[in-house]
Amino acid sequence: MFQIRVSNPSTVAFAIGRIQFNRMPKTRFSAIQSKTEIPTSEPNPGSEGSNDGSTPELRVFARRKRFKKTEEVQKIVQPHAPKLAAPPDIEEFAYTKVSASTNSIDTGKPPANWEKVLEGIRKMRSSEDAPVDSMGCEKAGSALPPKERRFAVLVSSLLSSQTKDHVTHGAIQRLLQNNLLAADSIDKADEATIKSLIYPVGFYTRKATNLKKIAKICLTMYDGDIPSSLDELLSLPGIGPKMAHLVMNVGWNNVQGICVDTHVHRISNRLGWVSREGRKQKTSNPEETREALQLWLPKEEWDPINPLLVGFGQTVCTPLRPHCGVCNVSKFCPSAFKEASSPSSKSKKSGLSKKL
DNA sequence: CTCCGGCAAG
DNA sequence: CTTGCAGGAG
Image (cartoon, rainbow, N blue to C red):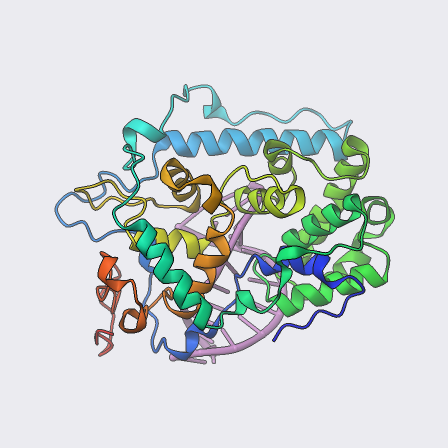
């Protein structure tokens, strides 16, 4: 359904195709929505709030990281600006190492039957037609030279978040036509121009700003190329963990980690892939899920797992009211048939409590 | 936890 | 009409 007509289609489609944040056909099935999203918290009666996965350690760590990023960006785009003040609590806290001890995932052992589950999902995916499949972006013939291709991948990733694929595609195409898909030209271009070209991708104002900054950073520090390490990518404004891993995977063919979006996050939790045995504890955000998955999932699967689960999440394992009835791995799924209406959401359901 | 800015679903 | 979405940043 997604036709690419750019001069070099596969290049840009490559990045886009791997991300699907769009509202999907899920809507066909979901009747009424409840207040909260399912995976946010486990019912967990009895021990309330004691551990929802997000530890203060994690939060402080995240804040430090963000500050560092802000600092670096500042140095590039406003070299003469006064130094930023560090957040007050930044050194109050010695970051110790969270993952193993305080978190739910401490075994690193593969969950039972994960291979069968993957296999089953693959089967469903081959018969289902998920939006994520609709472009054969996987092999990126890439008529663009490598450097330009990588930059295009980066830009595509940035634009495509929170945006329908055809909208992203349109934006990329417009950038291409205006010769604005390279670091130097973007750097020279007017921010307003970029903004109007990428409209109406989600958050186009912020993205236009970020694009300008990224272009400048790429120009001054990477000779117009994109950073080739995860950390450097993360230091770019608007590029977080999800996009950084995506760009490493498809831009550099260098798999540093799993690209975890909400689909992967949700499904991993439902399958019990990121919880410790004998506990109901789950990961509470995509980053934790990524770390948890990486503990046991064989590295060959790191790259394919994203498109696999994204498509599965679009067609079967939908955010609300997953279609457990047609899911051929439901027998392995601890959450199967249990999320008719999210139990943790306040029961504001009005007659929608019919199980699938 | 909220905002960002569109947009489609209810 | 209202609401949820999805990643990053504050």
